Length: 280
Image (tube, rainbow, N blue to C red):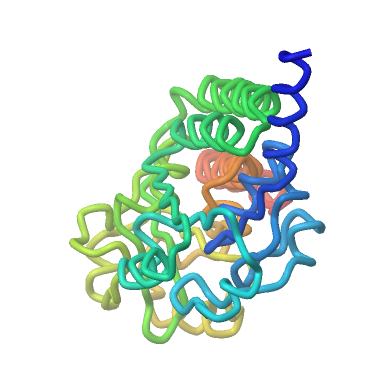
């Protein structure tokens, strides 16, 4: 009877969780461990899974509405370590809320985050299962693309001015797995404006950009840099930036798409026939 009471008490405690997430990838992690039902509030731009997308929004990752968070009566608030402003974390804690910053430093850390959240939210088995599935697929991708000829890659954000990211970005980790090197990995800040001269000097072999970028602006930019090898439109790879920048299991979908695109560029460089250069 005592054991039964403990089990019932534990189940009740788990069901009583009310979780607010302050970044889209945090909501994805919560749902990945089977705790979507405990999610009561999310950050703006949370669009996956569908259940999380329907939850009330508490503001953007950089501008959280304290009043909205309080009104949701959360038992815990998951913050994005390195993304959620420290001042916001301090304000929420000052209101008596339990705030847990979560940092994910690399691709392997996503599995650890799944295990941690599964345990903390009362879904330990699902957390372990999700982590195991993630690790297995990550290992398979690494094995598949290990040994590919390295490409010098430029990740382009916008076209006037042009931004890019450094080696600490999840984009760089994805490029590395796929056999490419970020030509601006040494930049001192996570993202920065780069000049035409800097791009020409870096001499990238391939350009990676978000599929929702302004196509006309991109085309005009590379016409201006017509002497560059990467000005060839066949050396451009469009990706789903949400997948590659959100540190959740779905990042592997983005990596798979990126790797396939880079393989197409390699094939085109080796045999520049229409069939080899055609984007999928």
